[in-house]
Amino acid sequence: MSSAGISLFDLVIAGVGGQGTILASDIIGKAAVKEGLPVMAAETHGMAQRGGSVVNHLRIGCEFGSLISLKSADALLALEPSEALRYIEYLSDDGIVIINTEPVLPVTVTSGLSSYPDVENIIDYLEQRFTVKAFNAVELAKQAGHVQSMNTVMIGAISKYLPLSKDVLIECVSQSVPKKTVDINIKAFELGHLQA
Image 1 (cartoon, rainbow, N blue to C red):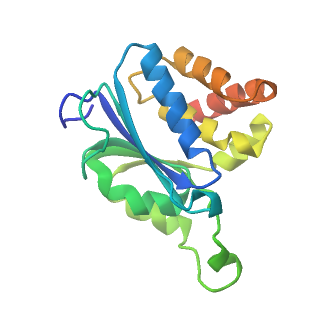
Image 2 (image 1 turned 90 degrees about the vertical axis):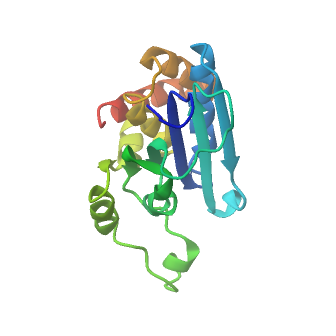
């Protein structure tokens, strides 16, 4: 667990607008509250509506300060591969990266104005420094029943490392998603849980 202050677990969640990064943070935060743990959170989502970068700092068991210091996060949950690179400096040397390998291609890539970094190169780079769990969360979300449950797949994957009960996390997922998608999201959570 985090060595910075009294925090039990410091988590950085990174993605792009539309991936459900903020919802993932909210679900984990609600689970911490249900378990009686103090939780602090901070989010940045400037141009998120247009596919811009979104990052959330989530400090479980922390009473002072919501921002995670550089090189002190216990885990980085990257819903998008290039966002893992953008925020990797927050991760402690013994931290873990959980990364969705399916990129969200920006307009500059789809229009041919630039190229997206090779995902295997991103993973290889990260594996030189950290423990990495990489898998295609988008495909698992499709298996569960809907691509939009990808963020729930990622919550399932990080659940093994959080100081929170799996049952409480599933309960918070159920309470936070539209009623008609509860079964899909629970299945997505379970598929993610198997990956980590």
